[in-house]
Image (tube, rainbow, N blue to C red; front, side):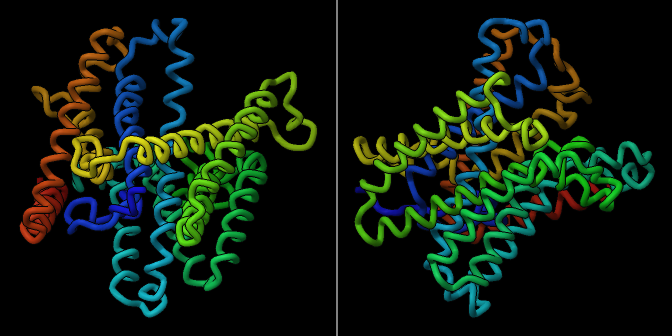
Length: 396
């Protein structure tokens, strides 16, 4: 059995730009790496595909598979944090180096999330922007959701010293988040909360990843990671995954059956959106994917230095920079999205997507190797890039 090997993205912040090599959980790295590749395809399809092809027979299948990317990222984020926090807990509780690293990571992820929502990468233009353009800044995306989720998992880790109580709290919070989500979606968030906070409650203001129900994926991921850690310590990991397969099968069966409108009992006792059973179906599929990656690692082994695995270690920067490549004005004063938005046929889109995936995998692989060879220079490089970006933002 391959032991725990390197620590994960979603628990990384500035570490996503420069860090020394740390232990990771390889099968979760594989799962995140695969999700990262599909994530690039998702963004390309959503931004560039000609809408005429959305009526094709293959599109609903693609759309369903694409819908598993965000649940997978959120689940893995929670799982890795809960798994590694057990050994970091003493440093957390004593406000040691790991405590401040974790705080920095969370703040950094949140910061990156908001920079991606900037309507203009210019302080001068931003200060003159109309209110409707500024409202775009407060739409909650996946990085903000991950940052808030990590904050809550971190606080639970500090408050609950007992592993059993920690696991119970994660289970309760996961179920409660899911259960109250339909009512959270029914509330007039902007009426109750300031605009910067309203987007965290529901999608009424255009948020793609409000905390309800997306945070439940992180809580259940945290529960998975905590239970996995316990199973490894007690040397019953194989039994754990056998039970996990039964659980995932049950969730897929129940979710797939009762999400259908004519069988769904949810409207009898709660608002119909978001759909409880669609959530359960996706959670079951994510658990099945996690178990499959674990089985692959067990049977075939995983090379942490492979292209996909090294790029997975840099998934935060891959996420950030592929969006920049798609949306910033790089091609004769225009972005890729502005030039080809919703006009691209499938074959051209497939070729462009493969090209972008290849560029991002190669770049992430080379950056990962550079960090390993000279962590200090890599850190200085990352800081230099951030200082340059700040200068462009404020004075460019």
